[in-house]
Length: 219
Image (cartoon, rainbow, N blue to C red):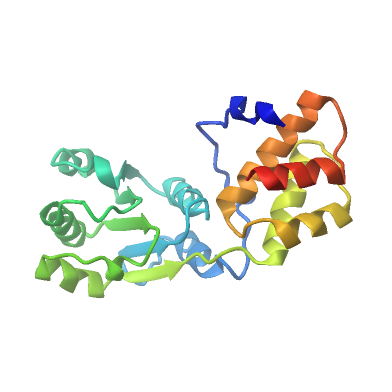
């Protein structure tokens, strides 16, 4: 399978609420986001590994109210004007290199104007080593929800749904085989599905255990 390097993955994706798989791994975060505007706190941090569904959750909030969304590493003073007419600010992929003064000012702005702030990150926001005491004080009052690694049931649902959407028939014994051997990472699961689908089409052959084994070695 030396032609694997030519594979191209999609650069954009439509996130639909009905496509979010709820399990014990993410239920708390999902329920909280879905309860808007009845949040017990206006500022929330959702953290978890890459590909765990954090962006999918932000899309659910975006469908509920007006939001301004920005990557942490793109933050600058213009955000105050861009966010001014919106009800919620979404900062994706919190970076430890973020301007602490800017984040602190945005935090205060959200509280003063009775708006909402959703911050996503790979680890809990209270574990970042910020130097600004006032910012650390604010962070202590922030509510956080973890998205954990997927369990067997969730992986099974993701695989079955993904293959069904592609009108691909796959036997349960093959799904069970994949679950026992795939890396418990949403990102790896997504890569596996895409590569398996592409190679199946390219080779013009149906799914087989041999093909599954080859793709599992690739990711």
